Length: 364
Image (cartoon, rainbow, N blue to C red):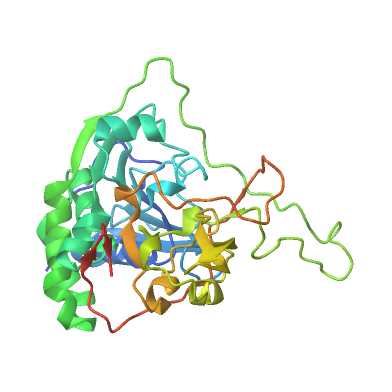
């Protein structure tokens, strides 16, 4: 079924554009493909969609681009969408670390996954123009047992102001509904709830500089100056890495009174998070777990699954802005260190057969 929906003005060189900023694992790549299909099959428009990402890992920065144009106009552009009409920020921690708001114009509708109000989020993102829509997609997805991308899809449809919600719902039924029939009801509820929950506010900051355009990417190495032997100087897990941008909303919480200092958490952790220091346990000298360095934590929660006593539980990071057991890495000798922000992590997936229940503010 085709829904009549003419493209609104103004267009950017004849196109209506989406840009989705996310990390791997939140579904932005799939959402871009779905928006491409929505425009072509259900709205009768010319449409193109493609994504840009590095290694296929959870936590890697991901961008998805979608262009719509009038049906009689062919789309022969494959460059990134520099000035989007809809800018979707699937992971608010990316703001300030990457130029995710570059290219915003007065007509841009920015949709961000956050628990903040539009007024608070506008200051946090330092937006100077456009309209801002906020929706707590992570919380809604957890409540409905849906997915973040479904909630964000509904919010972006609302932000557009002209795309029929029923067209998006029908597209979800025909695509992911057929592929994952058991998830159809939850996914449709996620889209509907995202559309209902998104709240908006106009952004206007007097005297604030306008958002810059997307920076031109220029590789530092090329065929002329690459070192002989192809040495890669980018380290993997090093002490100065900050993996916090790769977390998807959950962190391990430490309940020290339950800890037996078995060290299984340290054994399974791939990134030097747990800090064991000399101390006493049961009135005997021992290496005692003194806390976690959350700079190194990617939020994979392997430690939660392996802990035999429930001393580690999964907590929603938004509920714990001040992490009680956050301690510096024991191997850091210098008092000040410039952390290198790293977006990617090596976690593929992690499933447990244990049911979740609330324990001390976390999920166990």
